[in-house]
Length: 121
Image 1 (spheres, rainbow, N blue to C red):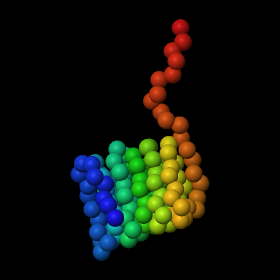
Image 2: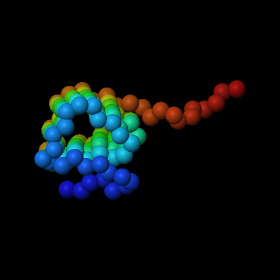
Image 3: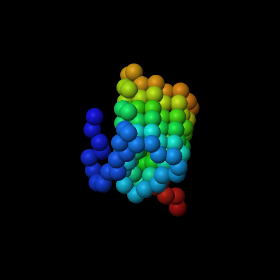
Image 4: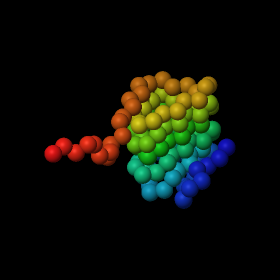
């Protein structure tokens, strides 16, 4: 299993349990237990194969190999890998679900924002 490659990555190992509100300005890899909220507005959250997360998540992108129960609000994309077990409502611009992944919840695909339209005179 690989961790995100770009920039700084904070890592929560499989023997670590966290309860509370978590925010940061770097990518996060969670392979342990986390309960609460996760706020990574401009960064990536990766839930590893041993990860068990019960949280409302706001991030730029989310990659899930493990379990997530909560809500996902990703400004860019969500990737559910084949081992993912997700009970969550998902709001994102793009979603990828590998064969074998489990998803129970509502998916809301948002249109990209910030694109300039044709100017009228």
